Amino acid sequence: MQAVFMKHPILILVLLLCASCIQNNKDKVLVNSEVKSKLETGWYFLNTNQVKFSRKLYKSEELYEIEAKPIVNAKHVIYMEKYKSDYGDIGLGIQLNKKGTEIWKNATSYAYQRSIQLGLVIDDTLVYAVDLRAPIETGESALNRGDLTLKELQRFEKKIKTARSK
Image 1: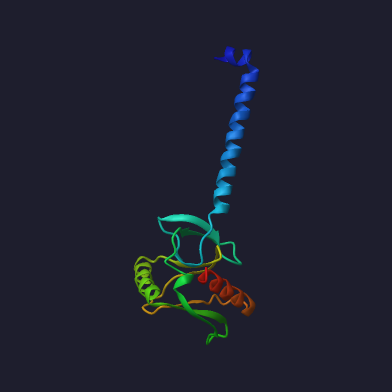
Image 2: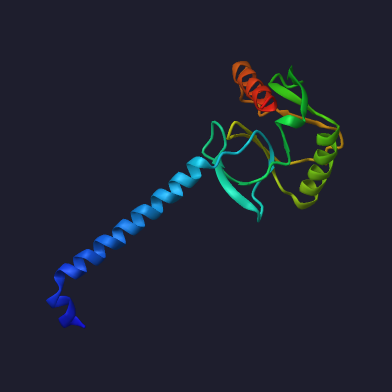
């Protein structure tokens, strides 16, 4: 075997180059497929066995695993309102339509019973990750992290409206 390699050093070089090219192309495919895979605006289950995507939380280094299909999306949103909480921080209240409310009720019950986090993705960006304290039986949700500015909330509200109209 050693004699074959000694007699054909060019063959070894070619094999090494081919292996390197295959690995480089594999890396490019993975990078390109992630770039092309965009999450639509909506609420998602986080860190489950059905993970399809990874995203860092907006303004954070925390990495979350996100299911591919949203629980509810922007088309379920019928109303949004910016508000100030009793603690002085601001948020964006989100009201869902009848169909979204039923889906949301079932999903939050499921997530609560299994201690699954939920995440709000807006325009392919994970902007909120939350542990539920109880199932939500109404069609209400909120973006209320406590560290977002009014300008950021306005921008997110506009993006939800844009996604809703598509």
